[in-house]
Length: 283
Image (cartoon, rainbow, N blue to C red):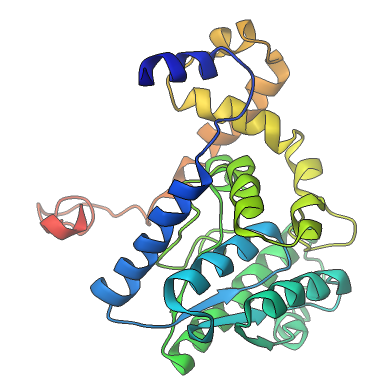
């Protein structure tokens, strides 16, 4: 039965579906185990952007740890959309979680003042990394573990800032494609406004993820899920995707492999950490 379901899905061009009830149960258990059992921590701190990914993460953490043990940090920059703050407030109000707004403009501009020729990409990377500095410092202040909010699509396409968006030690949605995050969001009761608005990193005015990527999340997820099953480019085209779509996704996956790994270590012994030296628990 399982084989027939997988095969039927593979013959369509739809992204992979999930069972949101089962996924929620598993992710809540995962968070409790990772924080309370393995790390002996009761609190989580999340960068709440006003987008659906961080909203879903907040909803999961609130279920796992209780609303009063979840700290949402909003970190706007001078050019950030005010609507993002309002959308994040919807989540804070619905869940009753703890919240704080920390403006990062001064910290970012303090550095960029010395780099007046920095383009939009560099400026965006600085903002992302400053936000992670804030999040980790707040975690030390609050005795709370930073929880990541990056989805599988972004991670596979390399659409994140290294040592920033993907830096938190625990990530409950990192194995969920963007379309699966939307599905889970509807099940969890995330405000409809957040689910339906165009995804944006909000690093510059009028920026959207799909415009940056050159492909919709729906099409990207459908291609990515099949690449991970071993489909060749030719097989993907046979199933209805355009050669341009397949090439774009394949190129991004292959070109960003390094971003999904810890720093590469030059090995001088047979005990190089993360290369050879792995205790059983590290697996």
